[in-house]
Amino acid sequence: MQITGNSALVVGGTGGLGEATVRRLHAAGAQVVAADVNDEKGKALESELGIRYVHTDATSEESVAAAVATAEATGPVRIVVDVHGGPAGGGRLIGKDGSPLELDGFRTTVEYYLTAVFNVLRLGAASIARQAPLADGGGRGVVVTTASIAAFEGQIGQLPYAAAKGGVASMTLVAARDLSPLGIRVVTVAPGTVNTPAYGKTGDELEAYWGSRVPFPKRMGRAEEYAALVQHLCENDYLNGEVVRLDGALRFPPK
Image (tube, rainbow, N blue to C red; front, side, top):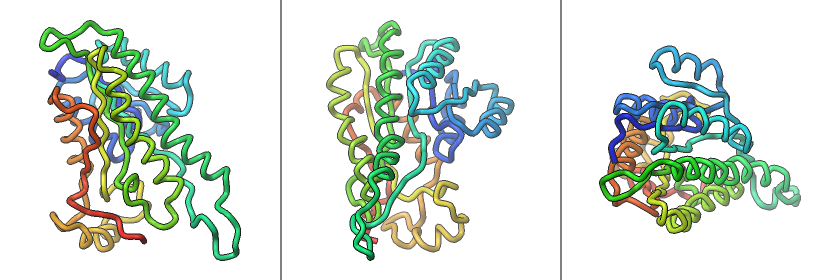
């Protein structure tokens, strides 16, 4: 599928991975709409690149629908990328004091990292389905979601996050099968340790801790590598229903 001339909605477009994706798809010729909650960053990207920014809460049906409508106004929606973040509760299932992990924290994490992904997936796919089939193969477009290698090797204290990301990974094949009659592909990226501000530490501290743990290359991932993979997933029509790990062969240890 050609990216040039089509509309691409990037939910979470002001974060580390999201911004890199916005820049990559914009450079590839897409009409990009960045949807997120960081208005300052979003407006700066809008001014710099000439893209559209729209304040979007991924957990809200109305908010995501408005972002989709903005993307539709810029051109035929063929690409939806969801890489939004949110609060991630955690802790051991049973704490040292014998208390169980809080239910509200689990619910909040699942709301942001699974339910909101479903929200973007369903509304984004509905928009792509409204577009005319492409001449080459009859496809309409692609939805790229974002899981994590924590979906497969969640660490101690990551139970809510691992459960949510595991859900995203599990939705991938089913969604691809559901949407196949419409010519819509669904692919998920499962990043490992990518050096972005989401970790809450400086780049040097992160590299010192995680870089040596990656088999090869001996460093953390880069947001630009995530964005490059997203571009390839958009352009390669035979990638569908798959979860692609982007982790340098890293497997999370227990802690």
